[in-house]
Length: 319
Image 1 (tube, rainbow, N blue to C red):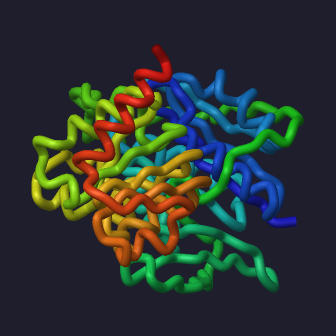
Image 2: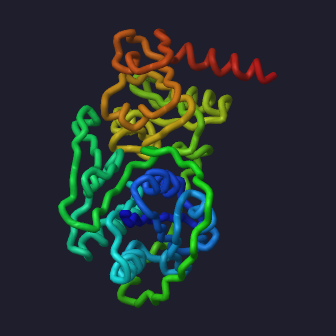
Image 3: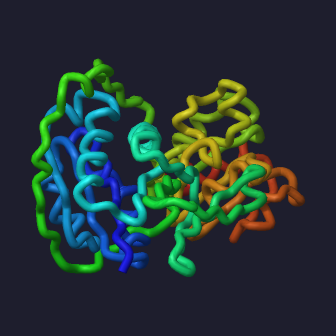
């Protein structure tokens, strides 16, 4: 049976959701071992076991939290020398990308990035990678092992499988040569009341909102629904809202219960990041907009009138 590693990314002591999403696919592909590094690694081991990890390799050295990528790369390369896996899965996040790229260079193998899925076929691993703004999907096969694949967040739905993991301490020391780029400050954007990737309801705005001055209308609706506000690439490129709000191939992937696209035409670049939403509602003046074809409910009209009316109705219902 194939041996699969999942890089269990931690951020300020918390296990990142994308790690558990990877576990859901990894346990279908083989025997799973997770690698958790930094503060919170030991606490995360129990959760990783419930999600299918048979072994969790961990080390809580402070260097993993204070320095960029190199300590984690060293740890993975060190572990690789003691038991090579067939496949290593990383989330397609900024931190994991740093580690995966360095590890691939260290091991002399390639990597496949931005994948939406991974499957095992005839002893090989095939990754599905969208291109042309998500309009096409390429099947990519790595010719050498270990196969390293970075998977977009929200590509799989996390779920527990039961069980527990054996915990193995990584008995290595991080040298000074790996402590060259220190993290000096972490800043949390105050506007992100509910994390976009984790929101159960996402309201995203596009050019149909008319300008940045109208985005507070979406924030009011998001507050009423307990959701988060996203945006299309067009309005991010125009400087209306920050990049952290961008949904799509070059932004964040979301998988909420309800996705409300307001004034968004539905370009492939955007829809590839939200098409896994359970229910899609589109509000747009153009009944022929591409987003209407994938929406479960399409509302044709002026978003600047519909959104405030919807917010008022929700607030009135709540009393």
